[in-house]
Image: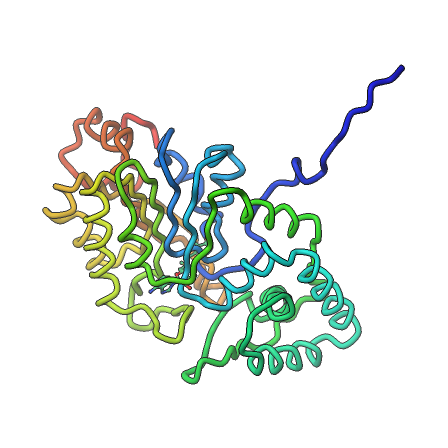
Length: 326
Ligand SMILES: C[S@@+](CC[C@H](N)C(=O)[O-])C[C@H]1O[C@@H](n2cnc3c(N)ncnc32)[C@H](O)[C@@H]1O
């Protein structure tokens, strides 16, 4: 008699970000991965966005069984993730309906949904579906609010956008619903204040602009100012001192480089590396050239690697070789 093998499709569906997100870190993963600690207590991500690093950690099996605190200040984003976790079928059903409507009416449907999205204050499955729909069909997948807090991104020009991938959405819902995973709408200060010894913290704040004319992603109505960057540096240094393993990415704006290569950060064990990256936020394709970004970490193996290289520099220049080879 043949044995019956039960095969759960969800177990093999890879999880990855399902939203397009300005500053999403999928392209930076090869540079970030060498800084993941082999073991940790909890995973904490205060600037979740599309969750590229969270999903990478889930996919690599590192999170298995460990608690995670996922947070972001964008109330619509967090509302969408929670609804997807708690009302998966209802979100998928509503999104499939929007998908069908979009195929018939295109941009007209987009602007109608945008109006309904802005009018609806409560969260829930229907608002979550609108959020995903606007993200998949809006211009460059941007999330931008005007001064009164209304979402104002114009329609994108996609001939055949992938709006609803039900199987993938179910896999994401399962990752969010795993025991010990919490999803919070919170400012970074609150999320970071709970990080303690052996917690693994990944911070990916809105990048400090490299120039005054640099394009800027207005993720929240409050924006992210130079003061926020300074407060974040303080919170990161404090978490590192409490024994958390910290990993942070940011632009190579001079004030950021100075803040994380300075004496206080160095004493907390933080090392700054410069890595080449591709910037994709600019609406002009010609301005999406290569840039240098910063990766800051106090992971013991990263610090050890640089020490072994006997580098007197705390800031590794692009192309500089370290003993760890990354
Ligand atoms: C660069 S994005 C993160 C991208 C993410 N790593 C990814 O892979 O998609 C920065 C995120 O910080 C969030 N944010 C902005 N200000 C914040 C604050 N004060 N506290 C917490 N999150 C904030 C934004 O909503 C945005 O999602």
